[in-house]
Length: 389
Image (cartoon, rainbow, N blue to C red; front, side, top):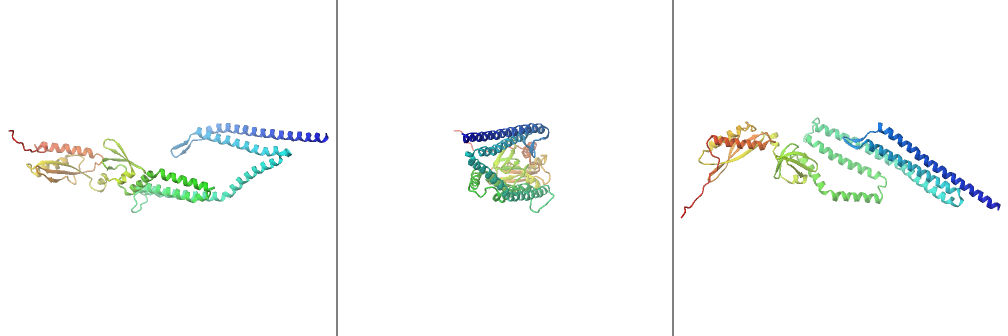
């Protein structure tokens, strides 16, 4: 009887101690939530006056409200982490009070401590690799800034490199930037956690295969865009012809070229199409010579002396405002057909963007010149008619 009474007393003490530990645990968890709840209220009132939107250059990544919500979410998540840690520490203590569950308590505590130990020593052992990663990123950051500085200097014309055009500076910097990113990733890769595991290598291979299969046409356009950039067949604002489309270049990106036609239509070409098409640049005539030669053909019979036709065509060209007086317009006789001769008037103009209006004015002046000379521009037609029987 005495032994049973002692056992009951010991059991009562153990249960009472377990209840006390459990109550303390609940109070601690409640206190953690209360403390973090007050902290969140203080953060909200503080953040409304102090926190600002997060921007990357001109793009707003998160507004003020989203920043506050993100911080509150982090704080609430941290409160649950602290509550879980308190509970994980309390459970081995509660199970350790009773002899029957003491072994399980030590096992549970061992799991918890070993997990913490693995995390702690894993972080300690990873610090040298982390320092190496930071050093690589630090060096690459300043190399990138140096390349950007030289690119800006070349683009502004302050730094001149023979054979290297200023408009090459920006795309060349972009190429070097992405090559530097790739080189940085290659250097950092061995220092990443679990980089040598089969799972990590399998994920890397899977991402690489998806990228190569899904972006073959995009990569083709990127490569074509690079080739076009260094070929320099045209610049923004040039009047060009690609296939049957004539217009002014309004956009030139790494993937497409967009032109605006004389009818204000926007035509978009993939860079691969541009690279494989013949390109006529009308604007380069203005920069490299006396301008673009506009030309138009007129057919006239042999009854009028060719010198007269030449005189009329040249005078019409000179009366066109957009036509250059020097060099003078000239006439070519393109063919001698059975019934008429084909004359071609050629004249220089530097109004490349308004070349359609130049042609229109030239044609009107030709009509006026021939009408004033009493000559009809209608091509003579001849036929053989059999008499009616």
